[in-house]
Amino acid sequence: MLPKPACACGAVLEWRVMIGIGADGTPRSILRCRRCDLLSPHPLPSAEELRAQYNGYGTYAMRAQLSDDVALKRSQAQDVAAKLKKRLGKSIQGLKLVEVGCAAGALLVGLADAGFDVRGVEVDQVNGQVALQRMGTGKVHIGSLETAAFADESFDVVFSDQVIEHVADTRPFVNECFRILKPGGLMWVGTPNFGGLSARLLKHRWKECVPTEHIRMFTPESMRYYLMGGGFSRVEVWTHGLSLVRRVGHAESEYRQNLLPLRREGLARRTLSKLASLASMGDGLSAFALRS
Image (cartoon, rainbow, N blue to C red; front, side, top):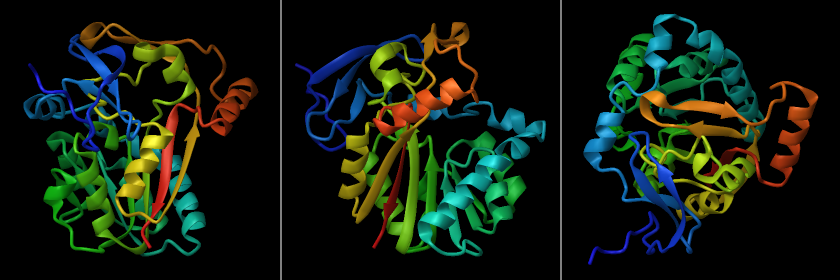
């Protein structure tokens, strides 16, 4: 008999929510943990499968060759800097920030221009090399956060967006983020919200339900569980956005179907997104976590 699959928290996963289809077309059970509310595919992709997946992952390096990705990320960098300044309650000039999962470094450029002393970590070799060329020697580590081996209490801010869902070992990842933060430092983490409206309505057809890539699927409850369990003293969780985009097919045949035919910046879309966020049902899940 095969052993029962275990969650990242160590509990046995027994509650099957749905069957999800990986990017390779392989079906996997999606199981929900009764202890921490985290969703995980069974079986998890192997280490070899994950390494192959992140060899040139995404289109970041391709966009970088067109030199337009920095401009596209400029407004996001300004928004991130403004929110961090407000949340920290002090000037951000000279504060040390590490972006875990910096891709080709486009956001890092904007955050450096905003005044942060930045570092980047990127597991993909192709994108990491582009980021290293942009930021300079010693500014970007190509590999995992753990292999970067930063000193204790090195950073004022750890920023990690759309990364934690790709990491199988959730607890060690959060613990490492905590370790490298200075007392009073802040972690900002973002991920898809598997407790949101799109996830509930579309289930395995939601565009973010890709169990060969998103191998740890968070809800507001599971995000609080892991951040508080990682030693953070204050955790603020919020959700945002609403798209209702369905994933159809897989691999080369995959495409995305928008089921909410409203203008992205229109009043109706903004109103629906706001209502979803107020109910913690937005498509995106973000959190601030403070190290005391």
